[in-house]
Length: 70
Image (cartoon, rainbow, N blue to C red; front, side):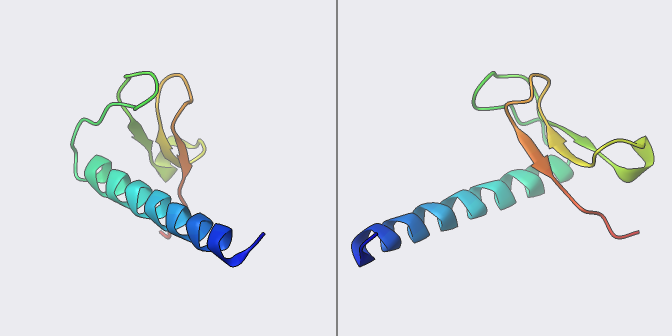
């Protein structure tokens, strides 16, 4: 991997991280956000639900695991 490819990978990774961070903020603020792949709404699973915590769509296209500190 040359330097130009590495810089491209770095910028794509940074954009993906920032997009996920913005999505998490919107969903936790109570906004209804649809999955870009399937169109179903993304829901948040909290620690008291006794399941894996994070943001998920109904079909599993969007799956962002979150660690909560209680």
